[in-house]
Image 1 (cartoon, rainbow, N blue to C red):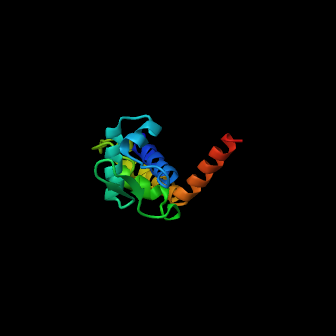
Image 2 (image 1 turned 90 degrees about the vertical axis):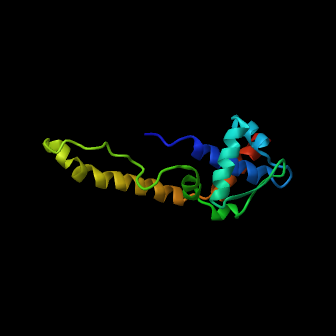
Image 3 (image 1 turned 30 degrees about the vertical axis):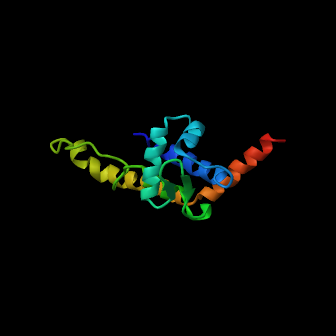
Length: 146
């Protein structure tokens, strides 16, 4: 199981808006050039971020803007906005064999571990804001110019 690229594309998109929006009209084509994907992918991502209340998008070439300060948006917010995980992150195989001692007990030994792993991921994502990442990004950009 692997989390889709939607998450990293969404974070990239939001940081691109944060970095460029003060001076540039940030359109899906503009963001797509930074992410190096088709603008359709960015429009789809922006739609999910808009639905989650994280961005405002003006139709046409109006551009995108953030709806909240970076320090009020966590990676967990972004993850929940773009990943289609409803409920459990880990999907369990259907119908383990109840006639088998392993099959009939697999849920009892594995369910709590998977729930704990999901909780750990969500807890970690909740600790990092876009402001944290933006600060790191600005530091790297500043170091490049020296």
